[in-house]
Length: 124
Length: 124
DNA sequence: CTCTCCTATTGACAACTGTCGATGTCAGCC
DNA sequence: GGCTGACATCGACAGTTGTCAATAGGAGAG
Image 1 (tube, rainbow over the protein chains, first blue to last red):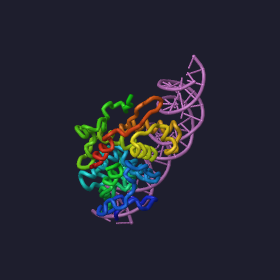
Image 2 (cartoon, helix red, strand yellow; image 1 turned 60 degrees about the vertical axis):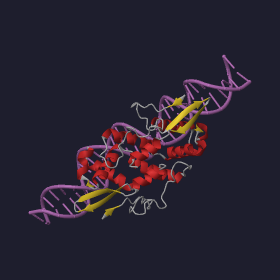
Image 3 (spheres, chains in turn green, blue, purple, brown; image 1 turned 90 degrees about the vertical axis):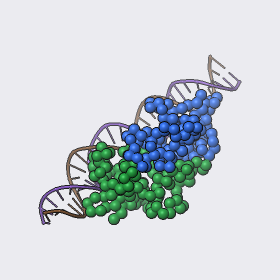
Image 4 (tube, each protein chain N blue to C red; image 1 turned 135 degrees about the vertical axis):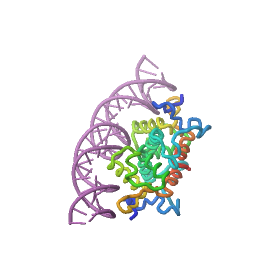
C-alpha cells in the first residue's frame, strides 16, 4: 500500500506519478506576479515542511540512496524513533515524501517532481 | 546606507553581489549528497524565512515592482506597521531582502541571486 | 497463538513564531 | 527649536513546532 499524503485539501499531488510533472500546478512562480493569498499559503506549507535541518538531511539521505526504511534513519539523523516518524509524516503530508509498506518495513522515496515544482514556484 | 542581514554567522551572503553566483557556496544541492549538518541548518534558515504566506507575498510584490517602501506594503499585506517591519527584518537577516534608507523612507529590493541560490540548493 | 520487531500515535513540555499596541528613534519641514 | 511622518523596537499573548517517553498497532517467525 502506498502511503500518500492525503491532506484535507485532497488534491496536493505535487508530483503524483512523476510523468506529468508540472501540468496545471500551483503557486504562480512567486516572482513577476503579486501571488494570490491561496497560492502563498500553499507554497508556504511546502516550504515549512522543508524548513527543518532534520527533514532536509532526511530528504538528502533518501535522495542519495533512492529508498530507505525508517530504521535506517534513526542513526544518521540522531533522533528517536517517534521523532523520525513525525518528520516522515510531515513530509508525506506536504507531498514531498512517499511511503510504501512492505512487510514490516516502510520504505520511503521522494515524491517525483515535487522538489522541481518547488524550484519552479521559487522563480525557476 | 544599505542594510545587509549581518547575522551572527557573518558569512551568509547567499547572493551578495549576484556576480559570483555559486563559487564555494553553501548547501551542497540537497539531492545526490547526504548534506552535512551545518549545511542543513543554513539551508533550513533561509527556507524558514520563506515559509510564511505574508513574506511570500511581500517578496512577490517587491519582485514585481522592483523596489518598494514599507508604507506601500501595509495595505497589500493587510498587516500592521510593526508586523511588516518584523517580516522585512526576517527576510533581511536571511539574506533574501536588501533595504536602503533614502530620506525618511526605506526601499526594499530582492537580494540578487539569493532565490536562484535556494533553487540550486534544492537540486536545480 | 505468542513473541518479537518495526512503525505509528498519544501526551506532555519547552522553545519558537506571528501578531499587535505602545513606545522609541531619526530625518526633514515649519 | 518643535512638529510631523516613516520606520524600528519592546512587551505581551496565543498558536505552532520539535522532541521524547510511553503506549498502541500489525506483520512475520516460532
